[in-house]
Length: 207
Image (tube, rainbow, N blue to C red):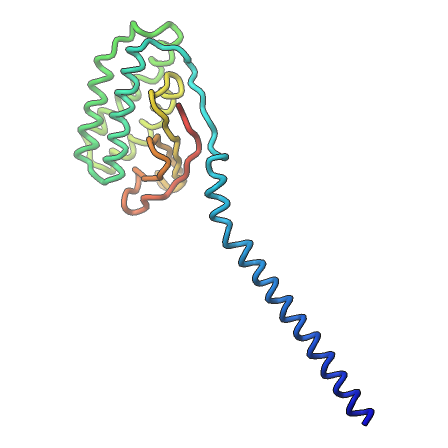
């Protein structure tokens, strides 16, 4: 009788240990699921906090300069959107318009400091705009990467008359990475279009 009781006690003890082990495994597994599943939501909610705000270098510019800058930015954004849509014809037209706008700009509206900054950017920006207006989409996208750097410098100096987002795609330009400016937080990649439309992230916000 004692042997039977002892055997039952051993079986009960094993059952308790086994149950606790299973519960612990379930708890750990559940914990891992809880930890991993909310991560994208945490990243999304923290994205705005991680976006750096960029201030304009020249706080005061002639109103006509502001109008010119906004017009140029709108043409640039038209190029960007056309490339994201895979439309080389619209990209060429918008870039040609941008080139013409720059040719007609009255630089006497700029102060000496402002003119120096503008002159440092103008020639390259015109060159890229002209190339985009005359080439196929693959070549357009190559020059757009360089145009975007120039536009970033231009907007950082003079403002855009609107909020812009500095986006970056690490896979563009054969994995060398490339940036662009956008009027929306939504990523619409001008380097890949439909192939990888959402490839990229917002790095800065410019006003």
